[in-house]
Length: 385
View 1 (tube, rainbow, N blue to C red):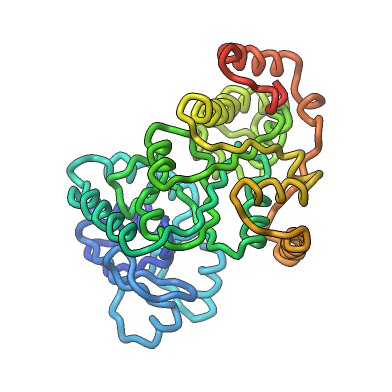
View 2 (cartoon, one colour):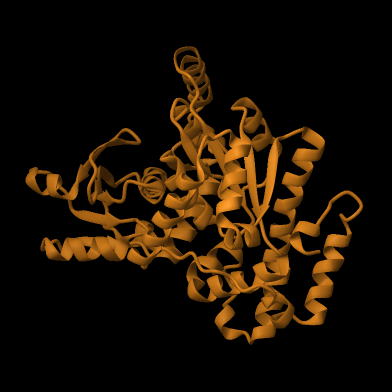
């Protein structure tokens, strides 16, 4: 936040490099808290067009234009690659927002943009009108909604289903393009925009809230929920947290540094701050099926990894996809090749039973004790509880 509110001189003309969620958040934040700054355009490494009522230029296209600006503000998950690109093009008047600053900025944007003062009130009516138009003029595409408990093979399943179907991949994470919508719900306008397309949808670990259940019923979606032995999920969460400490700390507890803890303290922290969320996510979908009649298919991480072809076949049957065993094997081979070629993609195969070895008896007891509060109504056997 300091980068935006303090370091940029007054009345600068700013180009935002990053035409994704982060860029839009930064633009909205600047429009609210730094009204003296002028957002000239968005920049992108490859694409051009328009976003959030602002022109998007590819960087090469931008350099061919005689556009007056003072600063390029890099706000993207690929900031290091972008910085290298700018340096290669002899551009020095830029600043990057690191992930810690971005998380703080996002927190501030949530509080501000959801305030009624900043909500674009006509937006819901416009979206509903667009939805009615889409339903009247287009056939709904095939929408495969895939959800999962964190650290249960989410990326692996998404890539497999995308390779198998050839459908467009998208996610329903909240967006600040339409700040009317709360941040823990599916992003409804995305489904309206893509109503007519065949989609593989990443549900982004969202729970089955009343709002999300309404969205699922509105679009008549069937949901696959990928689960995992909960005792094995925590060691994988620890591995992720230690490799991505800035991201993890921002999301869970900003003042905590897991690197300063010993192993037992790290798992104590995860049992306290991560385990309950994992369990509650599962509970919400279990109740959505039992109490609200949602069509939910539960599959396990072990089945996906150990019996990949059979599990994909069951998912295809569930969604009514006509795919042969040959199609499934080709998709598996394609994803395996993809994993080897791109080191940025991590589909790590978890080790069964790690939780039993790494978690203490007291930690496992706390996890079971917490689940026991719901055991009368919920079957936790698929989670190993």
